[in-house]
Structure formats: structure tokens, C-alpha cells
Length: 533
Image 1 (cartoon, rainbow, N blue to C red):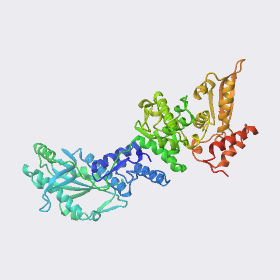
Image 2: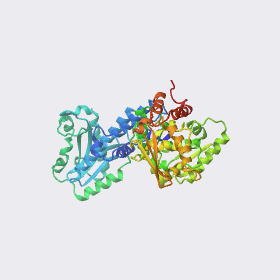
Image 3: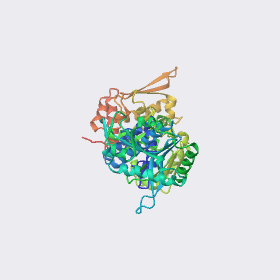
Image 4: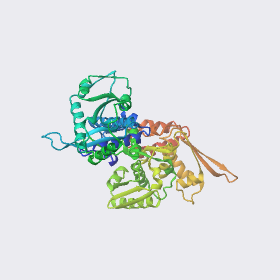
């Protein structure tokens, strides 16, 4: 698995909670642009990442290169942090209309006791109104029934609200603000959305001086909580004191991760999904915009074409990043069996020069037995994304096709698989196949088109071609290839020998002699790839 899927997240105890939330929000919004705070609160608040992670787990089971995957602990941790942050945001929105000042996620210094003379305390929401200063502890939970039992929170909730008041008292004491002005509230929010539940066993909290309410009544409670105690000057002074004493949030958990998901990851995930469905290695999937099929590969040998399309396959979903492949990787991936490494180096240098001159690539250079490639920003759309104009095919089929023209027609026919017909002007076909001007139409048909046709009939059911002529000279103006319609994914899957042989023998447009020639070509090129009876 290439580097793309080894660094789509960073797992470290140094990743702060805020980084988890912000990066998880960004990841979910990238996957689902409709992702909002309602979804963030829900019990499906990390659905996109979970689905992606599950896909990578399935891909790893194919036995190919391994992608990094998240543990259940890491996923649940991120979900809880997201839900908590969403709950705190909802509280902020609920109190804005009645609050003189609203603070979110406030960290204040706090001297707890002799054993902890220096520390800090985190308050979810801090609200200042004329009737007091409210420390709000937000509890976001899944409440499936009609009751929420405060015993679920444990005894720690009493320490939380007590320390909130203590920390704020220590900050405001120099100003002469009475601790009686500082009030605590526990707000319960249901992740499942409904707010028609009742509270149970909250009496001990209330006796400890804390209000226990649901989000839906928070605004009303603050609006009616007694008489004005603070004037505007005091409120401003309190705001300034809190701002000056406020500490940065450095909280972390062992299971924290920072997500680094990009559009390139999602593009590549489409290939991975296909690999999982079809049970094929990712390296065999070549995906790109169909416009690349119109680019003439003039001057490239068959082996150079194989290497070019291997590189194109690796560039999909890579953005404009720099891809580096060693000579050994290119040699193995492209099925280069020769031992003449000087010749191989020369071919790779020529390929790099061809790529650089094509203007499709920002950089294409071969040196020190490594080919370094990056896509031009102008043409990155040809290698990234996935629209109806994109095509894909199995690299192991193309690299074994021996004739250059057959390789090109293979790609063009696949692009038209849903239509079952590829029609093109004769002049355009000349350009695509890089046919010399010295070739007559007859010579082009016999030496380029017919040979390619015979090599491709195993892969396209009932493949045939016909030409259109015009004028007294019967000038060929157009050529049309027809075949049975199919989806491109059907040809991604390696079939057994008899499947391809049947396509040859059942083709009504082939003579007995042509069927024999097609079978010999097929067995010569594919005998090491297919299960021969």
C-alpha cells in the first residue's frame, strides 16, 4: 500500500482533543458536504470515517500491501469527542440571546489541595448574565428510553461542578466578586435527538447547589433566574479577568488521532472499493480520465507503454504530489523480463523525456535508477477525481497485449464498453495509432487494424469492425468497431482460459483461419496469466 494510506491519520498521545474534533469534522465534511452539528451530535457522527476504515480493513484481508486502520478504541474516542463538542456548541447557541458574554471550553488555573497545589480546570461553557456567572457542565449521552438516570454519571460529577466553582472563585476573588454569584448547571443532551426524556436521581446534585436541566429549557431558565446582581461594568471586568487567566487547552487522550483525509484519499478509496468487490490487487487497477486515451504515444515501444500506464495507475488519486518509482519496481510491475539493464535504463530515460515533453507532467526525470514524476496542475483533472468520463481497466491484461496498436484500441474500446460501439474518423484513428503518413489506407487496415482486431477478440464478445467509404476513389473516411455491451468492471476480473477462448470461437465475423490466428496470439501472450486446461 502506497504512502497515501499509511498516513491518512496521525495517532499520538501528543494530539490534543481539539485537533481530534477539528480534523474529524473536516474529514466528515469532505466525505459528506451536508455534515453539520446535528450529525456531529448523533450516534452516527463518524459514519464516513467508519465506512472508509471498514473498507481498508476489508482490503487488507486480500493479502495485499497493508493500509493503516483505526482501532475501535480510536473510533469511539473520536465519536465521543465530536459529540461532546457538538453539545457544547448547541449550548452556546441556546444562551446567546440572553447572555452578556459566552465562553466555550474554558481552562482556568486551579489550586485543588495540598497534594495538587497547581493544576487547571476545564469548564465546558461559561455564561455571564446580569443574574450571575454560570459554569455549565454538558453531558451528552445516548438516551434510548424515557429516563436519564444521573447515577450513570458516577460520583465524579460532584467533583466536576465543585471544581468549576472553585476555579472561577480563585480567578474572580481579587475583584471582590462573591462566590454566591457563581452558579453551576448540568445540561443533559440526548445524542439520539429526542428531548422528551425525564431526569432521575438528580436530587443530590440539586442539594449540592447545582441546577439540572435539559437543553430545551436552558434559555428559559437563564431568562428567569432571579434579579440582576451584576452591572455592565462588573460584567466587562469579569470577562477581562477570565480572558487574562484563561489557559490553552492541551488535553489529550491515549486514543487520540488527527485525521489527515484529503480528496486524493477519497479518489483512491473508489479504487480500493472496486478492488474489494472484485477481489483484485489495487496495483492492477488503472483509472484515469478518458481524454488520455486520445493522446498519441508516438515513438514509445510496447514495454515503454506498459511502464507509462503503470505510472498512470499509480498517479490516480495522488493529486500533484511527487511519485517516485525505482527501476526494480517498474521492471517487475511492467513484466520486463530482459536482463539488459543498460537498455532498460535507456528506455526509462526516453520515457521520462517523452512524458516531460507531453506537458501533462510537471516533472518526469529518470536518474540514479529512479523515475520521479509529478502531474502538471493544469492537467491534474486527468489523474484525479472520478466522473462519468473516467475509465478503468486491468493492467495485467494490457501489459500482456503484444501489439502497440492493440494496446491503444483495447483502451478505446473499454472506454466505449457501455455503448458496445466505438466510431472514429479514419484520420483521427491514424493519429491515435501514430500511423506514418506513408501508410496507405489499405496497408493501415491490414497491418494495424486487422492485427489489433485479432488480438482483441478474446476480450470483446463478437468484436467486429467496418469502414465507411466516400467518393469515386472509395476513400475511407470512418471506421466503426462493434461488440457486445458490458461494464468495464467485467473486464477487470480475470476469467479462465475457456471464457476468452469461447469469445474467439463464437465470433461469427472471424473465418476459421482468423480464429486459429487469434487463438495462437492469445496463447502466446497470456499463457502465463490464465489457468490453461
